[in-house]
Image (cartoon, each protein chain N blue to C red):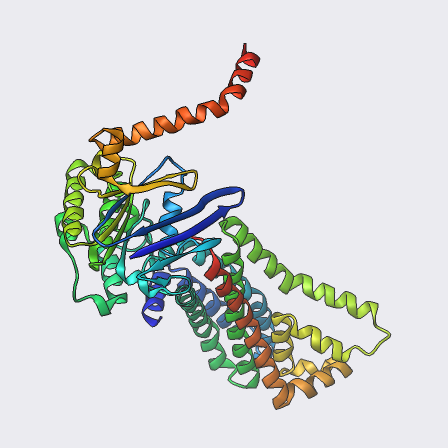
Length: 255
Length: 255
């Protein structure tokens, strides 16, 4: 599998998109840290970029890569190679290169300017989101044969996780505001990795003091070791589930 | 060596393979013949595990091929339209496949690579190749690992007469080594001096699988092309009776 991943990796680095993405993240992070006097203010701005841009790029890049390597996959299928191995090698190649970009582009500036708990939480959330959204992208592209449909599905998923979901949660919160909703919101946040990442990082910041009773409850939960394990577990689940489904589909697919 | 039992495959409304059963053994050269869309390529892809049949089974050396992939070690496949990663150069492609299958790289058959003079164009990217050169690459790859079974889908389509002759000579020399060779082709004159058995498919059904000699005796033709033409003609005259009335009706409408 490593042999195959290496070729996928090599192919991705030739396309230079990943290098552009790294530079983009690096420039934005550096300029944010340099513009703001206070590094925690810069972290807040960076947080929004990480939560919006990282999932979007991961989704689009992984989807396009899958369709572009269709020929490669076809060639590998006529060789003595299991389908699971082929798809997982593709996934490894894509997710590892996106992860490297993120860790170089955002990781280096964070290490330089904000080397603390918040910074680490941000790097953890960003890395998890990269893996999760590459995995979701693979599921979307294995499901639809048509390239345009696959990319469309990926975009829709991004809209859902980044924008629509928050709206839905707000609606629920307004509709049931007479009831105690703390436990429910905790559950709801687990159903969207972007939200989970946001809460996970926010609670490490000073601004969490402004969030009142719910904030205190969250801090009590996510601050505890149990909460950290819970977050890691849910993130892992979000990564493995779509990938597992993608492999299952891929094994039955006609090519 | 390969046994196919009651193979069925349907793509949406189209029944591509309809209860195909056949058995191929060592030393045979099977010609797969049939009109366009009769299921030849689907049958080949089913044997390779690229298309998953709806029902029925395929045995390779008496083992069902369902989830296994190791058996593909012994198959050399030349696709109808070879599709390869665009950015890869010919040399890299060969190097990659040898690397991935490094266990078997001792016993390589570089005969076609040399005869097609491929090393001279090793640094050409795959996307710049003409259809014929692509076919040469596909052919050289199919023979490279010295497999026991060769599956060639339209091998001579797109090749110039000289290369086509080289390929035919190669097929004959492999036939003499008692390998099983499956060829699908529309250029029947190419098959004349190669084939030992004829398998005729029509609308997904296998019409017959018999030795060339028997076919020649039955039709009284020595050339394969003429023999098959006679059979197709017979099929049509048989069919005409069925379509007799509707055709006349449309005639009236037209007049």
